[in-house]
Length: 296
Ligand code: HMG
Ligand code: MG
Image (cartoon, rainbow, N blue to C red; front, side, top):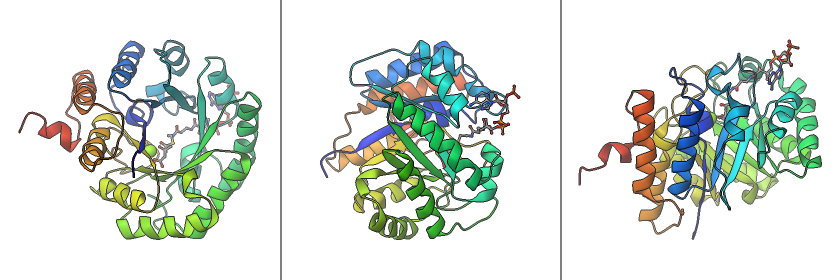
């Protein structure tokens, strides 16, 4: 394994569940610092209903003023046509759509059943593709639901196949509440990749129970080469009780670079991003590498 693509979701997933709402300027500074650290794929915000996620209500203003650099891709989350139209007016590079593999989480998160969500997302993907843009697809609660518990593998595969048929270029499998364990990740990927190529699969592991990094390692062993992380280990979903932060970008970069796998990210500069976020949020962040900084 020579290289792994890290999708930095801290500005979106990381901030959507925080009590402190950061200013647009601070978010833009964080984006610049991430770029200075070598991050190339940045999920910048979401164009959902501002009443549902007030932390990201500045999506349009933020996106319009993001620092532009060659080779850096900004992606935003959109739940429907309205979100896409709002985002398109700001000129982002890519979109991501999302739904859950469990009914109750889908209902709580986007106020629709899974069946009602399919045509909404299909329309959204069609519109994006017609504008010449790529769309990623998230499948939340793929490894477990905060309301229903276990989620069937067959349902996860069904949702992934529907998204791919709509035209998304990649599926990010969401362990929304951080319940997955390594064997489960391996079994899921072995089953899923019988149906869809592993090059179309990414991993999005939350670290609620400390298993994100080991789950990521197993995903890499199974051929996944794209992983989602948040600087400092920020993250969570307000509509998934118990969801904690994403796998920390620092922790994954440390592990991969130590294994001789290139990420293109400078760890010291990345830690500066998280330190600045700690200052701005007024609290320590959970990344282990960040906590160990300066120890040895
Ligand atoms: P709804 O109330 O069912 O929407 O919300 P609606 O279609 O019935 O419309 C109601 C009103 O909302 C209308 O306005 C629409 O125009 C407006 P009115 O006519 O009443 O004035 N509206 C919008 N306004 C702004 N932007 C929009 C939009 N859409 C409709 N995009 C909706 C449905 C999806 C909008 C709502 O439920 C919502 O915003 N949910 C977002 C929840 C969310 O962001 N969750 C976190 C992200 S997912 C996640 O974190 C998981 C992930 O990280 C992976 C993992 O960890 O598993 C990706
Ligand atoms: Mg998430």
